[in-house]
Image 1 (cartoon, rainbow, N blue to C red):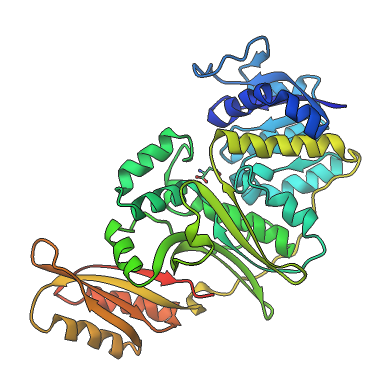
Image 2: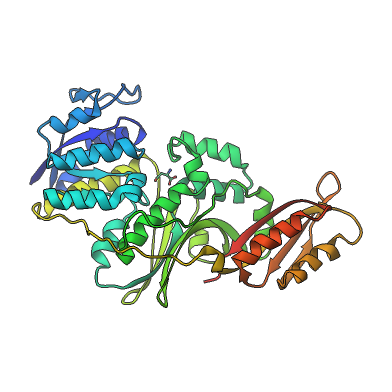
Length: 421
Ligand code: HSE
């Protein structure tokens, strides 16, 4: 049986979840993972009333954890700059690092992996994307023989939780509150609902799949905060639902990276993954399309991924750094040059000729309309008009949105891209 002495840095929701899971599943970790985990020390700035660490030594300065006789520092403090400092210090002190922190890997992955290689230690980060749902080791090991051409998925559990509840008629804010209570959301939930968290995750996956450096250059990120409950009703009437999708593609020499809400066919694999589930489609040359799904946030799921890294560490050759070092900078296609079909919901005053003036704006902008439907009137004499367009480019989309908003009769416009392939 292998054994690992670990120090846990952080004592919030994720860290206490790991502590409890190691205790609770101690025997299965031993029998399945051939591993005995000893928690030697915990770096906790303050006590957590929800978890009693028992006899385990507590350090109030998280950096002091590194000075203990441990093999691995498990970084669960979150955030970017202090986490970077902690990880680099642990590496320089020849400790392996396991982290669930996507933001620090996204921003400083290259520097961290380089330092790990120099010091002959490993940095493992399975839980940084999709929590415990296996994707990092899947991409780097199981799919090593494949050329990956596309990764598309819902990578933020909180967003999927909110959207699938809204699909069932719940309100945005009450569902976000519930996601926070369940421990799915980030300490600052704007990271979840404005797309940043999913962007960090797709950035990491794209770097692993395409061998490119971190962080990737700027790419288009939009969250779910502007979506209304009624958009689900209109989308479902035409065979779609709404998801937050992150996409990394390599096609005909062009790299594409983006994270934003989409209308997606309600019969597709991803559309049917509800609640806090994350789901990913991976297109490969040898295996074809691969699907993976599972819980993408929360204590248990994250603990599962962290423990998988510890099992991996204990059972692999410790003298070799696993981390791929890459300096390949790539340019992603300008988002403005991509084309999509779009869903528009235009709320306008119910005046004679309003449909005509709106459809004229589309034709003046040379945008084809696939369907246009005037929906049931809302309060204050406002009528929603739902339009599905033909494909056109993102640059024109911005111009069209401005032109629609400039119409006196228009009170509000929402548009969502339609994911077609
Ligand atoms: N806040 C994140 C999510 C946690 O909702 O997916 C897991 O990274």
